[in-house]
Every structure is written in C-alpha cells, then in structure tokens.
Length: 453
Image: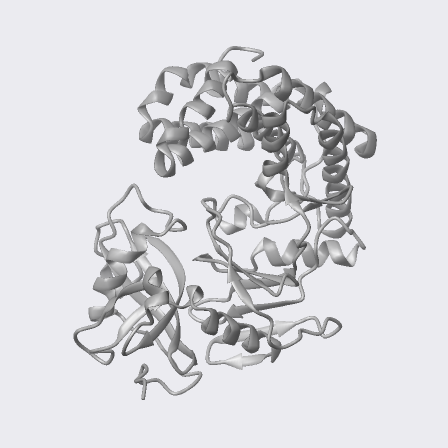
C-alpha cells in the first residue's frame, strides 16, 4: 500500500517552517522556469498553507524569502508567494523521473518521495475532477460557470513552453493555467475575460471554471478556459513567415483590429481612470529605468537619453484616456484560428504588483508591447530584417486606427515613451532569465536613447 501524507482530505495547516521539506524545496524552486528570483539567493521558506487535495497530493502555498533580513514579531519577510502541488508517495514511478523533487528523511513525511504533481497525468486528471465539483476544500474554493458542462475523463497533457506559470490541456477542449507566483486579490486573467464575456467580446475565450484560496489572503490560483486546438500563436506564425520570406502585413493589420476590439470592449466593461500621461507615469517609468540600470550595467550609458523619452510625456499631446488593458501584449499572447485573432493571458507582467496590473493604463502601452514583439521576431533570423518589422508596425497601427478611431502613429512621443519603458523591462527580464537574448532589447535601447528614435 502506498503511504501518503498524514492529512485528512481537505485539511489545511499554517506552518512557520517547512522543516525537512523546506530543504528540498529550497533546492528545487530556483531551478524552475517560473521562479521569479533567480538573481537572488533563496534564504528561507515558510509554509503558508497545506491542503490535501486527494490522497497523495498536497496543495501548498509557500513564502520564499530572498531578502536575507530577519523580521521582528514573526511577520512574513519580503519575498514571493508560490503555489505548489506536490505528489507524495513511497516510490516514484520511473516515468515521473523529471518530476522528482526529493526524498524526505525526517518529520511527518519521513521516508516519502515528493514530486511535482502537475507532471503526473493521474494527479492532473484528479485536479480537473475537483474543478468539476464546485465547493470548498479547506481554504480552497472551486467555482465554475454552470452553463458550461465539464465532461469527465479528459486526458491531460502538460504544456512544455517556457512561461511564468504552468498550463495543462485537457482533451484538446480546455486549458487550465495554474498561477505559480500568487498575489493577494483577483487575478486579471480571471477578472478581465469574465468582464469581456459580459460584453459579448468574442476575441477572448471566457473562463469556465476557476479556483482560489481564502488563506492567508484571498487570491486567484487557477483558471480553466476553452482551448483552441487548431490555433497557432502569433510568435510562431511570425517566425514561420520570416523563415519563408513571406509578408506578414495582412496578419498584422488584422491583429491591430483585434487589439482595438478588445480595448473598446474593456473600456465599456471596466471603469476607466484619469488621463494616463501625467507626472506620475513619467516618474514611475524613470524609477523602473534606474532600478534596471542598477542591475544591468550595460544599460547605464543610455540612461540620460532614455529619460528624455519619459520627460516628453509632460509636454506631448494628450493621448487616449486610461483604461483597463492587457498589460503584457506581444505575439506570444495572441492566437490565430482560421482568419480570426484571439487575445489570451491577461495576467499582465507578473513581476509587477497585482494592484498595478489591475489599474487603468494608456492603451498605448499594449500597442508598444506588440510593436516591440515585431522587432523581437525580426531579430530571430540573420541577417536582421528591419524592413519586415517596420511594415508590420505600420500595418498593425493602421488596423488599430481603422477600428479604434485614433491613430497610434500620430502619438509619436507617447509611443516612444511606452516602447522605451517596455524595452527597459525586456532588458531586465533577459538579463535575469535569458542572457543570450539581451542583445535584442539592447539594440532597441540604443535606438530609443536617441531623441526621436
């Protein structure tokens, strides 16, 4: 008989120290693609909650401290909260070797092997079963759209693409995104698609089920949406066009129209804010630039030129009103099925606070993200194809203008500021996660640091 963790089903516990399990997780966590603090040592791990989803599978929320500074009074130190699903059993099947975390030698789990349960098809299938039956399980709450039935027995498969979360596809019918880095509040990847569905916006697949935690704070943990099995993401399509020497302007123009459709629906569905271009916006951009330059020395010579792009916000023509936006729009966040474009992944930039990601921003920010993505694609092949990227940029903006009623190309100072802010984010991201890619955003930094670039 397989021995499992000594928790009754649905039981939860708050633990100050994860003990022997913490040692295993402290080694395993920094190696995961979705772990955000690869540039800082993991100094401590604190268990925030532990719930048995079913025998042999534990749901954990852990606090990863990377400050190295002890805190008085037992308050949680600065760091990040991560969601883990751990399989716990005596012996691990050889087919799950890649999922191995380690063997616990002491404590309540002594003698048991721990692995990443999301890589286990059986565990993934049982997780869907939990979502098929709404209700509470300890601090976990499972909810669904009652108008969309979830059939049993859908075979799961784990998506292998690099990303900041973990996604499971069930029977080519649904996709479940598990948020690995958890922040208190409603995740926009649930909030926004639900709001857009209420507006009848067909550009975004509507959530059919989701789950959240109420402890230690209310937070969204995962969202299940329809899967588009015959769709291709924009990044793949763009690289395919480049490899074949094909034009991509028709697709880019239609993508611009799709982006405008989503922005118009968002403006109607969720409250808007004040005008986005003010001193606070420029100050926030400057602060992000200075922080990035502190971590990436190659950025420092360009700081004075880049700051001029942000300063122009105070004197440029007023842009469109602030509203809810996508927040991290690029070619990897859009899907093309047939002749239609769909927009996915409304989580925003995971490194930014959830309150910021849920606040109103200029739609120019999304546009700038997509324009930077065309440049990223063009630089994947040698020789670099700047004309390909330029034509895509023009077509995308033309498509957006045709639907939205205003032309991003006529907001040059705004575009430069938001492209600069995006490129700074890319520099920091690549330096921390993919150093070989750093020359791509640095080339944009050199261009944007020149006034009018």
